[in-house]
Image (cartoon, rainbow, N blue to C red; front, side):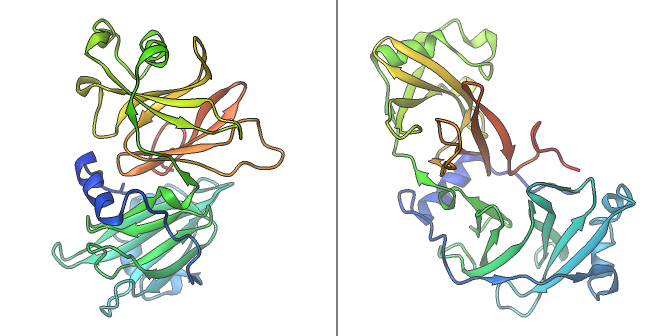
Length: 300
């Protein structure tokens, strides 16, 4: 299956500046549920069973394929929504669902969204100057997808929870904690010159009381287009405990916690052009899902 193209952090941040970094996404617009039909009996089957997905379909002999055609930009050319249902393509989140759109420049059909979902909805046009009148898409995990002018859809992290505030430089005890507890995302050969690191921090409230911080290692040699390493700490003064680690790009949200959930709420962070999800388990935060191919979300 073809992967969504990655973009640089600069491009993504530029797109965010168009959307408005500190505004919340409207997660309750009027939206229409997509109705799927048997793809093999449809006019779009020749497109689906082409170089685009033929080899992928061949890997899953038990697969059932459903599709729907929607005019996403109002130009009279339908985009094809495809859902692949099989033991290998479905899990508790739903089934692999993709959207392919005809690219006028390339003169070919291109995948513009790939996500596991049970259902999928279509909303109004993406409210950005680069949205090209492309409609918003919603998946069953309450995630909004917006077109931001880079030939693909991007997940809108603000649709998942409460947006974190901007970061500021960290000093004193928390900076010392960060330098004393460098995570595995920092290569060993870059841990010898901590004086070169700028540590940024964002205060969080993950347990309903507060006292948590994300500490971000803002040092160019260890950052990539995916983002910069981080740790989550909880405590005060010299009594901080490390609760998790990962990579952070630009935005994070605290997600709603279930009534019988753990003490600490789940959260999600932007990673390049995707989202990484973390949940609290056995006294630590663990990465459990991504919107891009990873060790915890594998491409079927």
